[in-house]
Every structure is written in C-alpha cells, then in structure tokens.
Image (tube, rainbow, N blue to C red; front, side, top):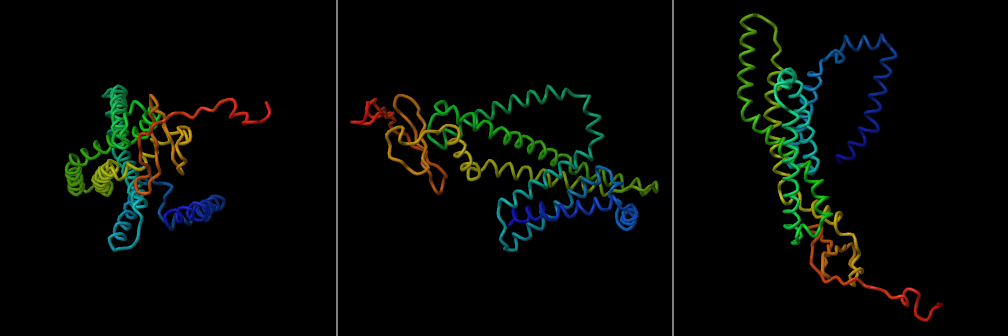
Length: 303
C-alpha cells in the first residue's frame, strides 16, 4: 500500500503541484494574491521549513501509530520507513536550530582528527562484527570466506555508523532535553518581563525533536541489532559474497537455488535455500569433477 501511495505521489500529485507552482510564477498577479491569502512560504527561513516538515512527519508517525494500535493493518516495513523519515527531519531541524552554536564550536575542536579516529574505530568494529556474524550464521570460519567478509563489512559499516549516531543522539536527548526546556521557559519569562515579542514555538519544537529523535534513533538501532532483523539479509550477503559455484562443481546433485563455495583440502560448503531462514549452510566433500579429453570430444565422436 505504501509503495502504491508513493507512486501516486511521485507521478500524479508532485507533477500537479510543480505545474501549478510554475504557472503561478508566470502569473505575477495570481502569485501576489496567494501570498496575501496564505502564509508567505517563500519568505520563510531555513529553520521554518525544517520545523514544519518535522511537524508534518511527526503527525504522520503518530497517525500510523494510532492506526496500528486500532488494529488496522500496516506493514512493519512501512512503519519503519515513516520512523526513519521522522528521524531525518528531526535531525535536520536540530541542525538548523543549533546552527549558530555549531558554527561557534566548529573552530574550537579538531573535528577532522576526531572523525578520523572514529572512522578507524568503526572500520575495526565492522570487521569484527562481520567475522562474528559469519561464524554465527554459517558455522564456518570467517577466514575461509573472504568474499563474504568484504561484503558484510560494506553492509555493516553504515549500520555501525548509525548505531554510533543513535548513541550520541540518545545521550544528548537524555542530557539536554530538560536543559532545553528550562532554557525555553526562561526565554518566555524574560520576553514577558521585557515585553518583547519572542516566538517560543521554535524552542519547544526543538525539545520535541531532541526527545523524539533520540527515542527513534535508539529504537531503530535496537531493531537493527535484533537477530530476526539482520539474519536474513546477512545470509543473503554471505551467499552473494562467497558462494558462486553450482553444486555440480563438487559432483553434488542439483538443488534449486543452491550455491557452493570451495574452502580447502577437498572441503566445501553449500548454501541451501530455506523458507524460514533464507539459507542454511552445510559443509560437504567437494572433489571437483574433472573431465577428460575424450569426454569433451565425445566418446566415439570425430577426432
């Protein structure tokens, strides 16, 4: 259902909106009327755009949660996509909200060196996790499947980056939410005392974005770390990276969808398709079938 709605928006709704906007740009008097009649969106700041996009995505997330809680059918993948979009919009708004603070802190710390050390650490952790997953899901030493090691490292590295981001955002939400609430209340109080106009909506939306962003990031990171989530895709990545030969290479009968990897000393491994797990792995005796010249030419055939 989500894919259908996405296609409808991409090929029907979005072109209609873009066509209407281009029409307004060619008709100045209509455009001026729209500006006076509705909110002057073109005069918004970047922070305003980010704030309202976050509010809209959060409304969709809550609507999906109530929809699912009410017993209506909604796919888990669709809900995860909505939560991920909400996390992205929350992060974008927090960046716009703290943009001045980020610009102030940027020259004070050696960010390049810190990110370099972080990248080295994440690469090492990704390699260790890939070896652990290969041993856990296949029962084979990771060193015997170098292609699977490479494929899994490429897959796991973005997951580890996201987990690190989730931990940072979760700690920030735990430590800064109350501080940000007190800051918003103090600004409201001072603006009332000095009778200065201050829009506190940005502050309270930042509180919501920090809390909801941290909660969603940690929830999605925990979901990614669940074996039921990663087991199937990881098995497929292992087969893609290391299992390339048909069973007939080792003289085995042909199993539909099965693939073989040669390990060492006439020992191989076979990946058998499984409805529940995707693939299951077994060690087999693998003696390559060697054909003679006569077999290639055909017995009794022309020389």
